[in-house]
Length: 144
Image 1 (cartoon, rainbow, N blue to C red):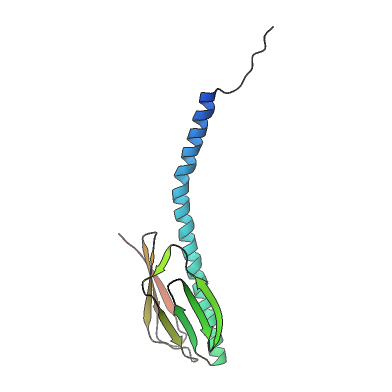
Image 2 (cartoon, helix red, strand yellow; image 1 turned 90 degrees about the vertical axis):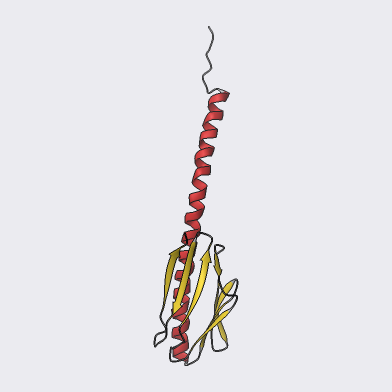
């Protein structure tokens, strides 16, 4: 009486591993793009939260709020006190080397625009608007 051993052949195992690897590799590209896009959105959300917190604190203390856009980061400070530093995501690059905004203790600033380019084929324009409350808006453009 002979026992028959059941299992997979080397060809079947190799073919299965090849197909699984292909599926994995095709999923990495879109996954990395989605992750980078999400990180950009999170950066701009954090910028918005920090912006409003810094402006509010400056208005409460009746001091100038300073926002410095540098090549690698954004610095927020009220008067002489540094509040927070935001590091740009790897996919974002500001188009200017250095730009500094000052918001008076009453909450007004001169209108200006800061532009960011993204490795994802997007361009973000952050428009800072004149007036009480120091609002800004972000426009997202897809490069073609």
